[in-house]
Amino acid sequence: MVRAGVVNHPRQWKESSFSETQKAPKRYAIIDLQKLSELSGFADVRDFQRAHRQWVEQGLENGLAVRDNRWSEAIAVGSLAFVETVKNDLGMKATHREVIEADGTYALREPTEAYGLNFIGEPEALSSENTLVWDESIENANA
Image (cartoon, rainbow, N blue to C red; front, side, top):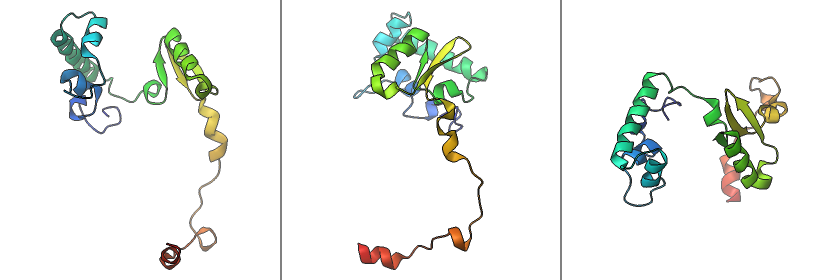
């Protein structure tokens, strides 16, 4: 939501992973903080949370809060092995999706030209020939 410009800091979006990482909910947690801490090289969750806050602050200071299509328009982003695994796991759902490499990062996404032909055309002004007047009496009679 920071990249979308809705909030200035991820802590302002209550449903973000930042909020869950910093203050785990008592019920219905999505993130296993203990496991995430261990995988990140921290024995103590509080040390991981402190480092996580610092990483986010540094990212915001370094301008990483801008929209990045790799994250917002992809199904999976990461190493080639990870993206290929996700693609395999999706099976038929990934049939027309392709793995794209950019700056050493891989993303699984639909080809950008997939919808291009469907949206070609010139916008036209409303006129009596292309306007339908809504008649509520017909709607109410059919209800």
